[in-house]
Structure formats: C-alpha cells, structure tokens
Image (cartoon, rainbow, N blue to C red; front, side, top):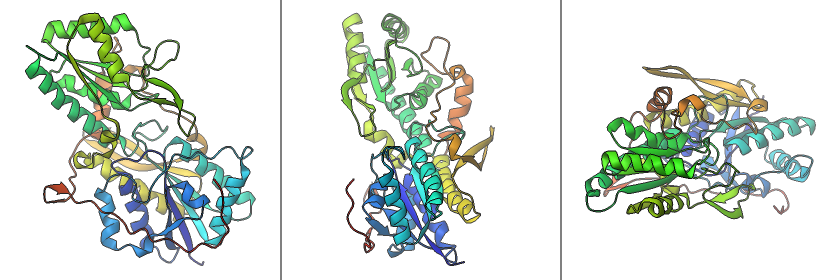
Amino acid sequence: MTAKNAFYAQSGGVTAVINASACGVIETARQHKDKIANVYAGRNGIIGALTEDLIDTSRESAENIAALRYTPSGGFGSCRYKLKSLEANRREYERLIEVFKAHDIGYFFYNGGGDSADTCYKVSQLSEKMGFPVQAIHVPKTVDNDLPITDNCPGFGSVAKYIATSTLEASFDVRSMAATSTKLFVLEVMGRHAGWIAAAGALVADQGIPVVTLFPEIEFDHDKFIAAVEAKVEAHGYCTVVVSEGCHYPDGRFLAEQGTRDAFGHAQLGGAAPVVANMVKEAKGYKFHWAVADYLQRAARHVASKSDVEQAYALGKAGVEYALQGHNAIMPTVVRKSSDPYVWEVGEAPLSEVANVEKFMPRDFISEDGYGITEPCREYLYPLISGEDYPPYENGLPKYVTLDNVGVEKKLGPFEV
C-alpha cells in the first residue's frame, strides 16, 4: 500500500503539554515511513487546513521535535475556530477534503477538546461520503478536564499542579501578614462549567490552609459564602478563596460575565476574583488581595506534572498506532486501573460518544457544604499532579524550542474563512 501523508492540528486554548502530544504523533509517524510518508501540521490549527497553510514537519530535526515534549503552548499555532454543522456550512468540510486530496492526506489527527472532537467526527463521516476516506483520530487535550469517558485529559494535571502549588504559596504569604494586614486572598482559575481546576486549589486544606472553594457545579449563595469566609477568618486569622471563572448565581448569571461572546459563542468571562474580594470587603471589611491565574496556569511547563507529560505523549503516540491499525473516528483515552499505586493504561472511545458531551465534577467529589472536596476527589487528584518533569534550563531560564515551521507549497486556490 502506498504511504499516505498525515495532517495534525492543535485546537483551542493550548496547554503546558499539548506539544508533548504533537511530539508523540510526529515521532511515532516517523517510525512508520512505509505507511505515513510525512506529517503536515496546520498553521494556527484547523485554519491552516482550510486556507491550505500547511507546515512540513519533516523539515524539523529530530532534536527539535523531541524538544516539543518539554515546550509549552502550541508549537504550530492554534485557533479558536469552530466549524459549524454540516448542514449550516458544508463548504468548509468539503474544503478540508479537497485539501486532504490535494496533499494525499489519509490521516487526520486533531488535538483538542470537545469542539475539535465534534469536528473530527464530522470529517470522518463526510470523507467517506465524498469517496476519499480519511482516518480521523481525536487526540484529547483540555485543561478543563471535561471530556467524557477518559479518566482525565492531558493538560489538566499540570494546571492542577500549578494551581495547587500557587494557592499553597500565596496562602503562606497571607498567613504571615494576617495579623496586621491582608486577611483574604482570592485566586480565580479557569473552568467555565466544570470545577476540576478549582478542586485542585482545595487540596491545600490538607496542609492546614483555611480555604473556601467556589465551583461552577454549586450555585452561588452570597450570605452562605460570606459566613463561610468569616468562620475561617475567625478561626485562623485569614482565609484563601479559590473561585472558578464559571461560578454563577441560581439564575445562571456568571459572577464574572462581561456581556460579550467569544468565537465559540460562549460568554466571555473574567473578573470573578475582584467581584468576590470586594463582596467580602463590603460585608466584613477585610483587607484583601486577588489574582487571576489566566494564561499562567496553562503555560506553566516549569512545574508540569510528570504523569501529565507522560499521558500527553502516550495519547499522541497511541493516536498514530490506532490509525495504523485501521481505527477511525475514535479518541485514545486514559484508563485508570489503580490510584494507589497509580496505574493507568491507554484505551479508546468512539467519537460518537465524545463529541458535544461535557463531564462535570461528581457531586460526591464536593463536600456537603459545597466549599471543599471529599476524600474520593483527593484520591482522584493526587496521582494526576504527581511527579516532576522539569525542562532543561539555560542561563536560569527554561530552554524551550521554537520550530522553523517551513510551509508546504500550495496546490489549490484561496479560500475565505
């Protein structure tokens, strides 16, 4: 059988370990030149496929590709661009197939979250109908940890480790100043609908830190929240609050809603931390400081979780291996076999059961009062933040790689997105 080319793209918000998945895809493909001639990457994600702006990864040295394993963010560029339904915009899907035909692409590896799983599934369906079968494999990635079936998502473990570490360190700072100064520190973390990242901040309670955690899964109650903070300050002299950006009132309004929408049609969030901090100040008069982790939490490769790095690479590698075995429209998954000791293996899930499905924190992972986590949640989280995988350092800074990203010659006409 003549070797086909593969297309790889990164989608949505990047992570500290998405490049480790790219490394897994490309290194594994290079070991099977008899079946995969080359891997083309989309410049800036799926936009690169639509505009035929492809990157020739064969032009990168083995050393540079290997360095992706410890380099954060998206080495080929990502984008927030959601393809509409086949009925609403068939031209985009047909354009993808045209590009794949023009460049003899028989494998499609899409590295992203729920929206990219949906795109991957639709491409697999349409390509068959158009007479140019493409094996579409979704490589999971999301800091939100909200993809179904897989035990956890690459990218989450490292964010969780960063948030748990930062919450702990900042809480030590507040504790040392509480007698005469700051009594409240508020940290805002990502998580629109699922509170997995906020849960990681709650782990600091195991080191004696008085912490109140606000989850998207729990409707916000002003008076109850103020009382919880006051109780912590009265007992310990200070309190740390970890608030998810998706924390909302019973009527569905986000604490942090700005009244604008992003490219996916989601409400743009930002500002839950100052809202909460000022809320407490007005009620109790406590002096406060607040911070928004924002990009820092998902870019912090210097404190990445070893288990997260290993899983990100393994699922990229497995995606290629599954494709070579003839699988299509699937997503490699993490299957937990044991939490103590931590044992996991790679599994698979059909994209028909992954696309457009969101996984929330189970209620039994959240304490009865709604402001902390339970023992089952701790047992779930600790293995995911375990181990260190430091990047190489040079002159005191991490030594990350910037790829050459040499383009592939275009064969088709222009396309407007």
